[in-house]
Length: 346
Image 1 (cartoon, rainbow, N blue to C red):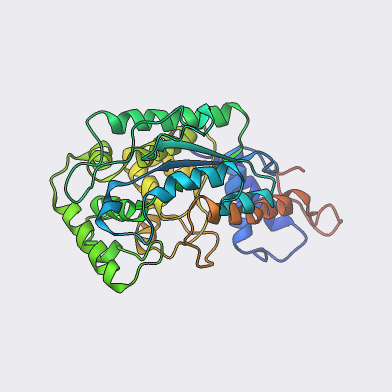
Image 2: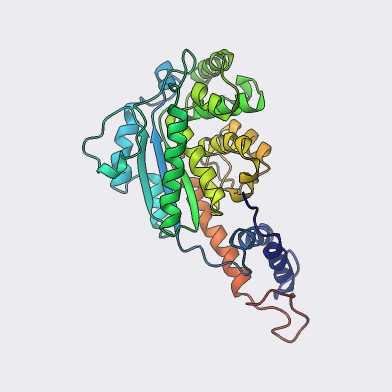
């Protein structure tokens, strides 16, 4: 797996230093502009005109343990909201001209009214209750992983220049917390969060459920963790992230679920982390551990915890602004005020 272009990033940093501004005056935007240059292997980087959100949906059997404020039936209902453009991520994405695609990977319903393409990659209905049983049957994690990779390949072949892995599934913050805890050897109390807005009593119960899941035996490695503690949509997200990285297409991570999947994917292929950015800071504690382990710093921190890819979509204008500034601002040499950056033409 090839890394981002160090030469393009160096050229971008040189260009940024030569723009008509004090050095470093654009703050984090300069870092992001250089990152994009490296990802695209060109300086200045091209506009992000073909951003795509792909929501990989699935239910989680652990929701039967009462760890969420909502019943699992909400997941199937939300598929209709995505298709109608009424979900939060759809509304946010429309503001920025970003299409949203939703796919049923493991929803615990048959969805007869959904278009056939929505269920084309379905692996199974729901998942096991991870505090008592494995999430997936043997072979299902690998099948979902391959499905996620195929979905990413479709988007890349269609011309995507930035991908966002969205999520939808009641109980998925519990699954994410368990995956992070297992990967980083953390206690349940460190990773359990309020998810959909549960109260203190339910949070204590959720912590105990995660602890029970972590106490069960599991096979080693990413596939073992996904089989024991994950879900079909989690495994598909891992495959999605890794295929994008292998194809040199950056991914903007969203909240706790995609961050947990990125942590698992990064343990499988460490070089893939080079191709991911963290869109925003979730209020879920396990996301902080995952991003710290990955060495990723969120672009935004606005207290979001919706999921769906909404936080990442909200960060896209920041990336677009970073690209526009490095590409559109003049240099001191162009104004006759000093030397310009070597090898960083406009």
